[in-house]
Length: 208
Figure 1: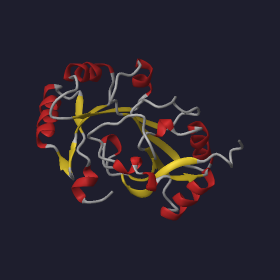
Figure 2: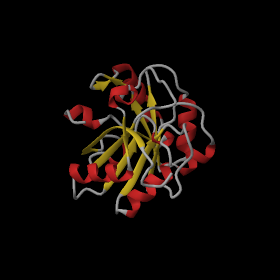
Figure 3: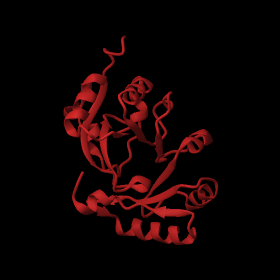
C-alpha cells in the first residue's frame, strides 16, 4: 500500500484551545482517532465508539481538513480514542512534520508502538500497567483519578522520578466529579509541588 492509499479511522477534527495540563490555553488542532483497545466505563469521549462517526481519511484529506479549520495554526494534537492504535502512525506523524506541523499526542500507552519519527510532545495518560520506557519517553504524565481506585502511592513515587506529572479528576458531566476533585486536591497538596492539578479548562468555559 502506498502512502497515498493509507487510510486512517478518524471520528473528529476541530480547532480549539488545549484545556489540560502543560499546554492549557494554547490554540491547537485536534485529530481524534476512532476506536480504542480499552473500554473505560468513565471515558468522557464516547464519539470514538460510535460506528456512524468513523471516517476513513487519507493523509491528504487530513491535511486539507486542518487547513480548512485554521490555515495559520500549526500545532496538532493526536488524541482519541487511542491514536497509538492508528495504522502507520509513523507515516502520519512524518507527513504532518513534513508539512510544518508541531505534533503532540495523548495516549494511554496501549494499542501500538510509539511513532518513528517521534512526536514533538507526548502526553501519557496511563489506564493500565505500562513499561518504564513509556514513562521515560513522555514529556508529561496525566493521571486521571476517580473518587476511588488508582494507586496514589505509585503516583507520588512517579512524581519523584518524572518532572512533569499531573493529576486530573474524572469528569462528572461538564465539571469534575466533586469526590475525585477533592482527592486530587489532597494528593496535590500532599506532594508539596511535585504534582500539579489539571481541571479540563475547556469544559468550564464551554468549548470543545
